[in-house]
Amino acid sequence: MESNKALFYRGINSKTGKFLVNCLLPSRRLQSVGSIVFLEHLYPVDLRYDHSPLPSGDFAHPHRGIATLNYVLSGSLSHYDSRGYHDIVNAGGLQWMKSGNGIMHDEKPFTREKDRPIFHSLQFWVNLPGIHKKEDPEYAAIQSEDVPEVQLPDHGGIIRILLGEFGVWKSSLPTFNSEFIYHIRLNPNSRFSFLPRQGDEVAAFVPSSEVVINDIVLGNSKMLVLEENVREIVFQNDKISVADIFVFGGKPYKEPIVVEGPFVMNSDAGIADAYKDFFTGAYGCIDYL
Image 1 (cartoon, rainbow, N blue to C red):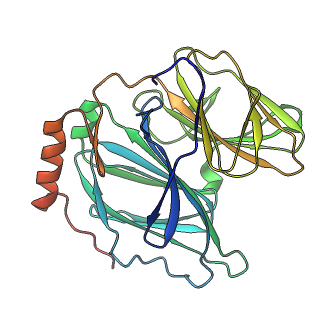
Image 2 (cartoon, rainbow, N blue to C red):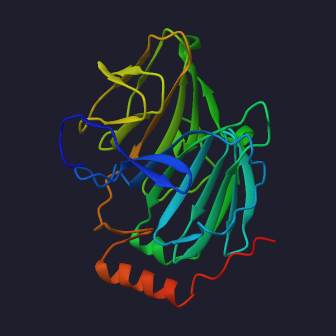
């Protein structure tokens, strides 16, 4: 992080095919929060006429040097890649892919239920340490029932551990620099106090209903990066409906960060190698059958 004060981010809207997304990280002022170098919010979209999980192939793309994590808030998401991995997750589930030394992948948001046609999701990128950027790709689909979930005190709601550790609870996904991503579902008229680890960089993102975080109102697809070495983060929901809050971060990433399109490496030479391998077909092709 670049400042010892809390920073507020609105993000920048863009189109990905027919989907409208808000890109909150990276930004002009902020390159990463811990090892997390990318956060994109895909706004709720009505897919009542799209029930097929099979991608068209038009949006297949490569990655290298990162682990991607897609979290589905509503609807369903399919995954295909050039290593032969394929799966589908529904609301509350996540798709995780370590791109390592390079992979092609494709995803397809869709809906299985006519009475629940809305798709809504988040995507994070975790920047791998240099040594792990050289490893072979890996993939995992985590269904909703397999995400660790902890009750908050005083009937305050739940916290879901998407990545990393929370007390004695731990996600089944690997981490590389003590990174974490939590999904808090805070009940109406409730508060929750979170004590981050000393030295961690920490941010909070609220996709919709507003909450108060350390006396700062946050909501409607906005992100707040907490000040360095904050000792306590207090989340307060004064509304009459459940509020979703995402808290993420980890230890500062110590190596150089060079981002170019879908690649995140530690040098310009690493980026050049990533593109060279992509254009020569080293990442393989996706079999959609």
